[in-house]
Image 1: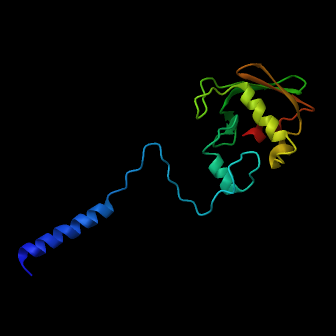
Image 2: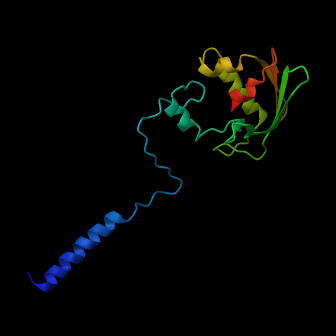
Image 3: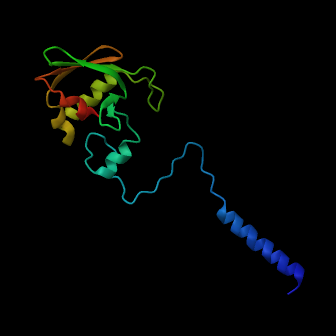
Length: 160
């Protein structure tokens, strides 16, 4: 085999190996993930499988969450307080949050989510965590008041 043919083949092989070694460029705004098991669904009110809940945690943000010490910290709610008798939980909501379509996140969205979660037709496994909620009010766009049938301090942890 001639030297120029060997050089040409060598360059061709190296070029082929180089093209394999270069990372594929992803489209803008594309997330590609590999998981061992598929999510069983993406409805946050009906999922109980851990793999689904893990996927949902990357899509939805809770009102409160926990830090590394498992202390409750703000997420979509910036603060909260219970009434003296423990029958009202008032949550102040983060302003400037938008949905994927650009619409604003407001207290009415929180009420709509909890109304759906508590609807017996939805059959949410999490509904029992919120059984003390009797009604909800939105005094303004960024305040939600949960009216409770009894004091329910674990309610905040359920929201995390």
